[in-house]
Length: 173
Ligand SMILES: CC(C)(COP(=O)(O)OP(=O)(O)OC[C@H]1O[C@@H](n2cnc3c(N)ncnc32)[C@H](O)[C@@H]1OP(=O)(O)O)[C@@H](O)C(=O)NCCC(=O)NCCS
Image: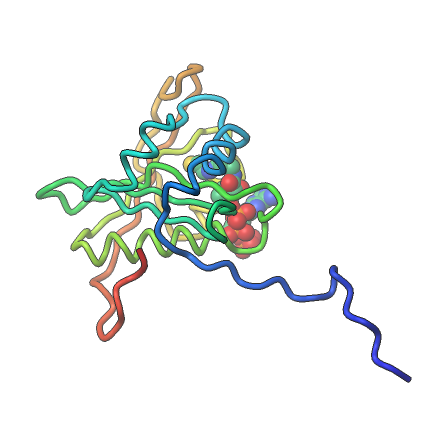
């Protein structure tokens, strides 16, 4: 009997490449943020600024112009604490491990910069993100009353980072 033709549903999806964000990605990134967050979003100007910001690590997953996910980390001089400012996965790409990959890549980037801890804030009603961070080893540092534009509470989370992995190339970007 001939082998059944591979259907789109059965064909394994290619693993999306993580790479530095670039200008061509900005329209899609703005749309991603608009769909994901009601407020507290980055403007086009802020996105553009962070493309060339030496105090930021700004990565996306997916082809040029059509990223399916992004993560943005900020570093401060003389601080060993990095901050995950934003992490988003496109609705169609969720639930397949991309959010966790972006989070781990952000941690690796922070480690490479000499940081010992990655911190982030998350809405207290964002059950999916809270589960992601709990599963990834983050601990709750503090509840942040009325932290968001609309008055919603947040939680500050942190994870201690080990030393940078030896004999490995630094993470892209
Ligand atoms: C949060 C977000 C980035 C997760 O991305 P993702 O690619 O779907 O996540 P993953 O597939 O890597 O899942 C990692 C973990 O997240 C949790 N998770 C993911 N989807 C979930 C769901 N629908 N329900 C409950 N938990 C879920 C699980 O703990 C999961 O681990 P598991 O697969 O071992 O159960 C994504 O849902 C998103 O972009 N949400 C909107 C933006 C947002 O809230 N960002 C975080 C702001 S702090």
